Length: 397
Image 1 (cartoon, one colour):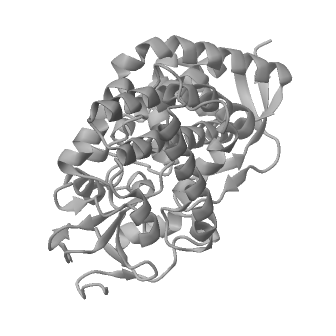
Image 2 (tube, one colour; image 1 turned 90 degrees about the vertical axis):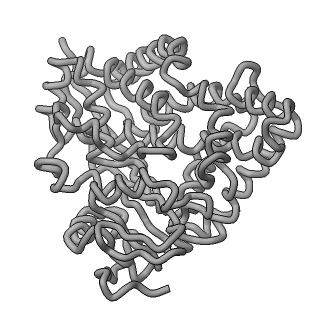
Image 3 (cartoon, rainbow, N blue to C red; image 1 turned 180 degrees about the vertical axis):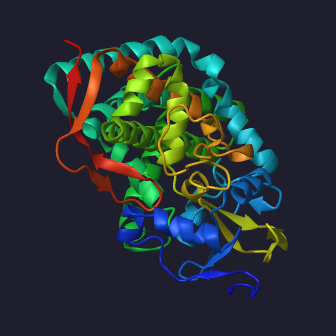
């Protein structure tokens, strides 16, 4: 497929190591070119402006997920029929099986558990003085909450982070990173299938609810397997990304940490600003169902459309001073990092709860974060995250 002459073209590969590590100049260039830009290297239309991205996400009748959300067809074929890659009645039906467990009201009893674990973890790390904000902090809380919530048994948990990362890597173009992850994605799928076959999930968990729905005939065995995995990767990697990025940002902008400590009520807004500034999910694809347009740019039916959340969240047309990190930003709540519309992130309430609990616990005692050497980025086609952020903390005397 080639682009319409009416749509500008961008020739750079935005999935090279260099572009993943330093993406924001690419994003600015895409926004400057127009509401839709043909990505010559990837055979897709990029949507990098906020208004256009939000419009696409809200129009799930025209811009469909049912043919997959990845930039390569092997990955799309694997996920067809899951909640990410479904639309309309099927999407609503699958989401209904688990959505009630992910609502803020349903999660309320978990809030005390998460807050207590956050307090215990922070107390331990602050007592050490120095720690890695990714491996010691960002990994630890979600890994102590999410597997139990989903219902995964203890055996196999050692693979969850690796599988979740591979799952997201597979959603990019079929580059070397995606190719390397395919076997890991297969391992994750096989494990999910085994859980459904054996019923080896924790009682009362989301997974147990999925199996009950299967036994009632509400969903098929294959759908049960997909639902068992659907919320694993998003519930781990996105939250880990946000927590690691938050600590890095507060180390870089200590005045923002001072502001947060002085006004603890800003913590929820600070989470929105972290997600806006360093969007955990880089981009997801859609497929144009019919001939349509994006901001006046013609988009032929069957075109792959890449909605770049991370670019939209830095759009100067929407956000004043978009490259500044501001925990009190009044419109941070409008960030698109959790998506919007039919495919808005179902697990965002849990992600917010975990991130807010950690920031609240840290703000009680930590006065400063100091970076102990350069942080290391994790290279992933879809997730923007750190692999390591070593810090030393100062505390109140």
